[in-house]
Length: 284
Image (cartoon, rainbow, N blue to C red; front, side, top):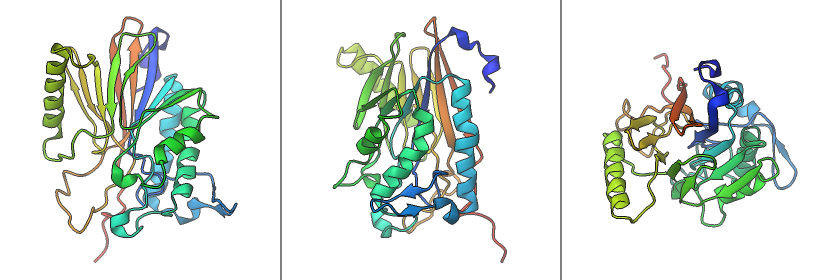
């Protein structure tokens, strides 16, 4: 999709939506810049990257960031799981470093060029990728205050009203962990939202944004958009089982929500081919 196919001078708001960047995962996004730890020691993650990580890194820096510039993005929504975390069930494996301070610094380095001079709306991710003794996403948001025009940390949930429009987004990290029929789950959520709106219990949202599943799904109804967001992590086996291998193949990329001056919606998805890391073809 080229920005030349859309009249950007007729766009009121341009909002980038990302989720599940899983920075410092062995299968996820890593900054190009060296990362400094608390003792001032410099770690250069580029020296330890596998080929798949280099591909994801290239998607981020060479395609996604320029795309956001081309579409004049004014706001970034991050729906959580910014870092991989310490992987407690795997004893800290599958990360470049389980040190959360290093991971938060790496996440800030990746996000700085994306949020520079833009608004940032940051959300928590799953508990597994958080920590009890530190607030990962809130700390990342605070580190980015010197780069973003405005930063808001929302925790687990927020209804966001976009200035200059009549649109409201219902945002959180996860709606469900269902992997067989996730579109059906989103559809069910939208049904109950409509019931609650009709009963006067909640504000009426125009967009329902969720992450967590690393899948892109868009249910486009006349009165609401149900949107499951892609992530930035290649496939790898979770736990001690490999279940639904084909079904759990991820979508990698981000979304740009355009709202024009007549309050019409254009939702663009920018998806990139997932590299094979854990499931590459090997000679035998």
